Length: 444
Image (tube, rainbow, N blue to C red):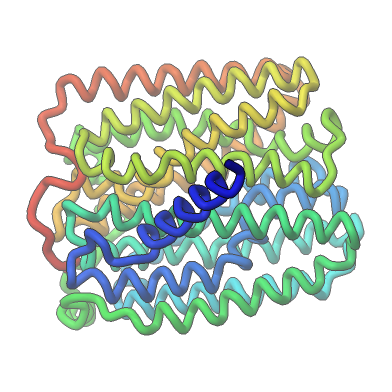
């Protein structure tokens, strides 16, 4: 019986790996890009794991005795980087997008390697944050390049399914490395030097894989950019929110649910240390592995769902789940219960599954090929605005006014956003994300 169960498990794992890394169901012209992108994700997985918010934030809290205010800077780094990317839209579009992605990875490698040279003491916490902000900014700036590659090389009707496979692969490797590295830090705190050097090396290798990708009709886009065609001004990025009212309303709701989510994010590493007394292993289990496990269960189904239903309905599901996770998190803190905390993080992972797909590609439900860069720019700009303000507001409100009540209040805001999305979905005549038009090249 046990042998039969073991064979079933092995067979299931083998089939899952084949589906995740194979070409089954992929359009022929998307296969080369898919293979190079997956190779880059595998190569960069170690660096991504140590640069992931949960790992860096908890290492700052436990290894450098960093305060919640410093953790807020790390939480603000990804959305702040999005704002930088939005402001650099014109510059980034003048280069080949695979080269932009590779350059961002190599910049992240340099900052990550520098962490290995820092003594892990409180007086160096600020420098650690600075290096991680540089690394995160470089990584997040590559998002525009990656979405441009997806827009050009992955057909619209299959885009969600393709990208979800990469998310699954990335999430699996991130969870594995995060837990393994947490165990290594518990055994020897000085192992962080080797960890960060290895992470830097992984970014370098990944950059070379991105350089191999060829983007459809990219030479035409670069020529147009060089002659001034398709230039983007900051006002043009903002104006799209008013010109396309449905997109503006979609982004307003996203602003609400996103703000409510990152309002609480800077608090969790400190709660793990001060309320739950977590080790590196148990802290990474709660912050990274539990959400990742939930994502692995959900993303295979969500990739197809994303291609079939309205973006408003898809976002409504995700926002409602985020609200539930916040309510359970508040209960975990009040009870000082680590098992309840892990449950809340698993529910958070389900919400993150919806969020990862809709954040990366949701704007494509509104944008045409000619103005996709404007919609993505507006999306990144608003992400940056909330990211540079809300985490610090959350720390202030928690420390000086609301305490644990802040957590369930954020859940209430997420629930309001979910209701807004669902009401919008009922009167939204747009087709599902993956079905607006046949796939065409990205030519902004």
